[in-house]
Every structure is written in structure tokens, then in C-alpha cells.
Image (cartoon, rainbow, N blue to C red; front, side, top):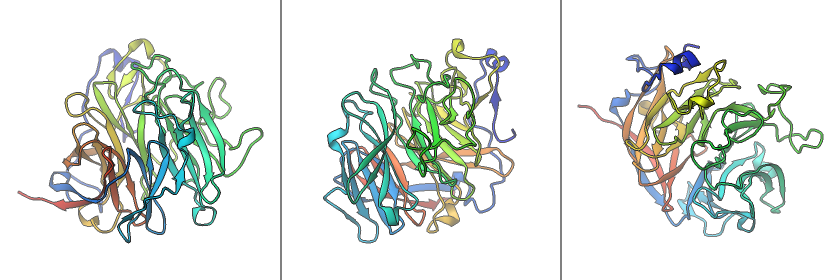
Length: 393
């Protein structure tokens, strides 16, 4: 596969350590200015949010913003108004006992304009199980679709969800928490921990309130959960699809040596990113490595503890306002250092990466509006509009 580097055990034995995949001087058509000349900026447009965790754009120009405690707030990009009253309040069922527990993700149904239906992921009371539900905003009626036990440790819940271009719902769940993957979840196909799932929520199949798409990679595989789309992940805190080509960008928070970004082509399932045999591009625990396995290295990583502490996944910019400088740029941030990272895939399959400025402190999530413009929220509760500019010299 020319677009990424695959590691097998003979390579692991050499303890190979490498950085970001090499940059190419030739950027893909329409990808904006070279990353060395790109700078990101932010403008605060609202505050007063409480620990926001997700930003989702609606077709009419509004943004829905989840708050960790279990509320969903509405921001109107046309008027600049953040509504005081939540459009959804499920605080009565949310376990937010630790920093990484709470209301973690939201996706709007493809037919939202008609149905006013959203899908939410949260850690439930009392046991902290990661829970996926369908809720109708008009009535507040909830239907629980899926749960994953997560009682032992409060961290690494994942919880991001979004609809893919194929119409299926994708959900990320962390490895179960603590450190070092004590349950061996990342390389265990018989658990949903440490995975990204793909399910069809438009239908019910048998006793399940959803269906497993026939094209999922582990359908019919003994000892494997059929919902799994990608595996070997530690804590995928935000992922997104590029609207131009349908590819999937995943930010996976590291153990302490490497924060990573992974990239899958449209429709590419079954990929093993290596945790907890691998942490980023490095061997983490050789006892977790399978000599017969093929592990997919990240397309970008940086040093955790040196250049930051936790990668926050963003989106590929496909808006119009800054298309001449930023089109095709995947933007991510670090929670601690506030570094803004830019990343692009070149026409020859290599990747170009670099720092493109800084965000505010403690970025927690990115989102896009109906026009493809980019927004970011931070832990102190502020919402920013993201801009781009070109610098030379």
C-alpha cells in the first residue's frame, strides 16, 4: 500500500522509530499554499459553555454543542447568538464522575430536518458504561442502541460519533482506561473497546436495534465483533471524514511517547493500528505483538510529553472562505501545548505536515458548519471561528 507504512514483527524486532511520513515538494491540486506559509487564527464568537465536548453543524447554519454534564446548546452562526436554554438535557442519566466521562459525542440523523433525531454517546449512570442512544429532540424519547461496559477505569471512553458518506454511523470507543491497556483490548477482536465501529442505525436486525453492514470486515469471523470497522486504537478522541474523497482521519491519544493521526481511504475497513503492541510508530509492548499481524503506522505523529500531551482531532478544511490558502488541509490541535497541526496527503501518497500556529488553551473539539467553515471549542467554554492566512518571508 503506497500511501502508508505497514509494520510487521521482523521490523518491530529492529525497534524501528520514525517520524512523520516524508513531505513532497509537490502539493496536490487545490490544496492551498505550502504548509510552511499557512497560519491559523481564531476569533472568539461565544463563551459561557460548560466543558464542551462536540461541535456539529446543521444545514440551516446552526451549531449544536454538547456539554460534558449532559446538555446540548445551540449557536446560530447567522445571528451570533448562543441560546441560554439547552435543546437537549440528559444530565439525569450521565456519569461525569471523572474528567473523561460525560456526554462525549453527538451526530445528527441524515433526515434531521424532518425527524429532529440525534444520536448521542455518553457514559451512563451508575456504572459508566459507554452508551449509544437515539433521541428525538421534539419529545425527548430515547432508545438505547448499544452499550459497552467501562466500569473499572474512568478514562479512555472515546465517544465520538459521526455519519460516514456511506450513511452508516461510526462510533469510537477507547481501550477501557488506566494505562498500558491492562485488558489487552486493542488487539482483542472480541470486545468493542479500542475500536471504531460501523453500524446501520436505519434498520433493526433480529434482537438488535441496528444492523451490521454486510461489508464490515469481521462479519462471519469467529471470535470477532461484527460491528468493528478499525482496531488497535487507544483512545480515538475525534475523527472525521473528508467531504472531498470520503477518507477517514483519526486522532488517537498516546500513552506518553507518541500522539498520532491515522488516515484510511474511503471504504477501507479492517485496519489494525497496533495498540498496544505499538504506540504510534514505536513498539510499546512486544508481548502484545503477533508475528503474523500487520500493523498500520500513523501518517503523522509527534512526541507526547515534549510537544504536547493529547491530540485533538479536527477536520479537513473544505470551506470556501479560505479555500485558496487552506483547501485540503487536515487541522488538529494538542490539548496541552495548544499547537495547531496541519497535515496533507500529497499526490504521490506521501504526507506533508507542520505547525501552522496555536489555538487557545485546552482545545477539546472541532466542528464545521453547513458551509464547511471550521470552529473550535476549549475547556474553559469558549467557541471560536477558525481562519487561515498566508505568511511569506
